[in-house]
Image (cartoon, rainbow, N blue to C red; front, side):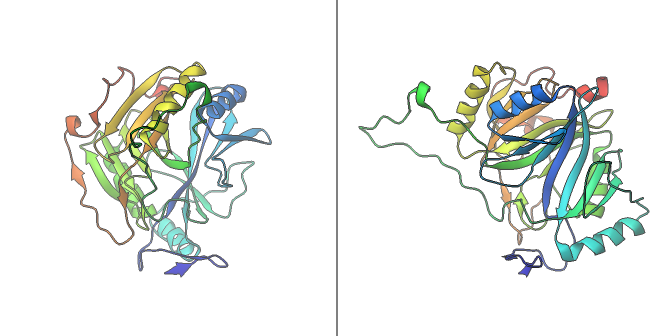
Length: 319
């Protein structure tokens, strides 16, 4: 056990350097009001922060994402968090590897360092508390006893509100390059992959099956952000919640193979997706996960509707 200065003790893999959390991501979109409507409908706590929007989950002060305004939708940067005692050794590792460190973008305060990954995606490495879970998050699946009406009236159903950001999947021109870069410099480990088409990576200090994933494309871009909920019922209710607001395009309900989570994806106004996700596999801090390399038919979904034809389209590459 170790501790961030002034913080409570937390679990940590001894003697190894690596980030512990996906702290946040940043995108720019053409219209912040449209983004506000989408993410509020999704069940997030959307806060105005100067000329940007902050995405939070209700009951938490962790800012999971920030959204700015620009000419077109674009993944701007990813922010990863490390323990305080690991930050300087990780910074030195970047410098010794020839990675050029940069100042923060204008308007962003930071205690960290900034650099580009193998494919030109801007990365922040910072000191922050661990926001990835220390154990598998609670999942509810039960049947009510006989003589009980289990489902509420639709007019009285509670709003679905995700509990946390689970992961992001981004496009990359080089999947193997992503594995090499993020394992060498950020200490992530490969969970599973499907050739050079897609890979999933987890944190060494205890994390879900993946806190970041990479899919093959001609250019960088955000495919989806995934948000954890507590049951299959919440996934279904979330899908209906979005459909009632006019956001009907997406994919689900289904279950993934790699990661095992149940899902429903809702397409946003710019061609990326927000995913309701539940019961993803968890890799404890003291567990070694044997990474597999699976054919495409065994790497996407176990059951569910047919994948939409444009589901893996990188609209940022086409802009």
